[in-house]
Image 1 (tube, rainbow, N blue to C red):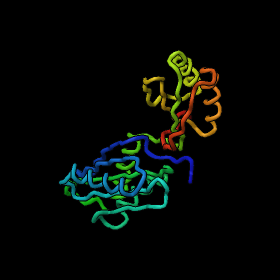
Image 2: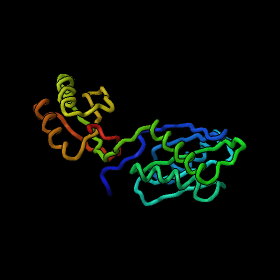
Image 3: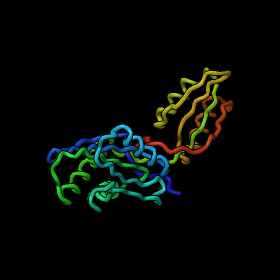
Image 4: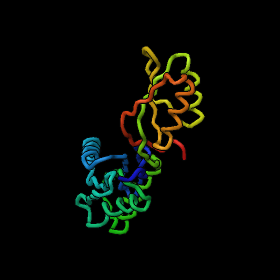
Length: 210
């Protein structure tokens, strides 16, 4: 399993007009094919009057690749959208481009250009991010050590994802595997050996430090 991949930073949208036809582009990061299919259906429901709703997607693992021209001439819609995904080195992403037909035929070249342009505008709006497989851990410390722990975490570029105040303070963070030993060592030093670290599992998240 890969420990990183590049995808859209979040949802984005773009709009491109060509000879009165309007192309609405939408993009969203996904994990599995089911996520892509749900998003495509969401866009269709959101824009029910579009003549064509074309798309391309690649799942997070990169082993499922699909595209559709949705009754546009073969190769003029889905493939140009997919080419944007491939050219930008993305996986774990779906791009949908819905077309409002303006009454003027664009020809194969015009369609190819318009669908690709709308897809790229949606990506530009969302931006790209490298997603990394982190360890999700909880750090347990006493109240008197909490501010010092926060300070040391900030020096390591580690952001608090959740903090709970119970009998002790419980801080949830994402760390890379090679940070685990250093974080535990700092926690032990700060708490005089009384602190505890619990590994909850693994989680994909945008790269914290480029």
